[in-house]
Image (cartoon, rainbow, N blue to C red; front, side, top):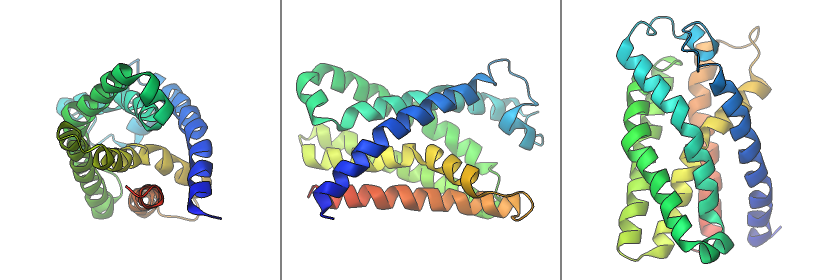
Length: 210
């Protein structure tokens, strides 16, 4: 299978997958609209739910991340770009501001209190740093008129964005409570999700010869 065919397959599978999982994440997020501290993920974070600062960053993150997922999808269609240049720019700015101003700071704080022990914490902090680095470089390059470089870093940025989806897919498919230690599995999953997404991103970049 040649690289161009591989890219087409990835795109065909990725777009509906991200849309489906974004909708599922909205369903998951809806359980937090009542601000109950004993639902979903918060049931595993009872040690920190009493911290108002942590809770603020948690709600900021979960109520804004789906916008990043959906906004990012529109940025990789050449047809969308050509036919909707102004909309592309507007959505791109929303994506960038959402990440750099809202989610990077929020996720840094959340990462410091991550599940998965030191493995999970270091994984989330590295992921946050890469998220900021890739997104900021994408902005700086487009301001200089480097379209190819901008596209490359946007692909890398979005690869980090959708680690939330990859993480949940791996967890739902492979985690068995009676077989694995939750903390260890959680920490390793952070790194595995990031490695998978960045590997696919680098494959796409090399295949398109940016």
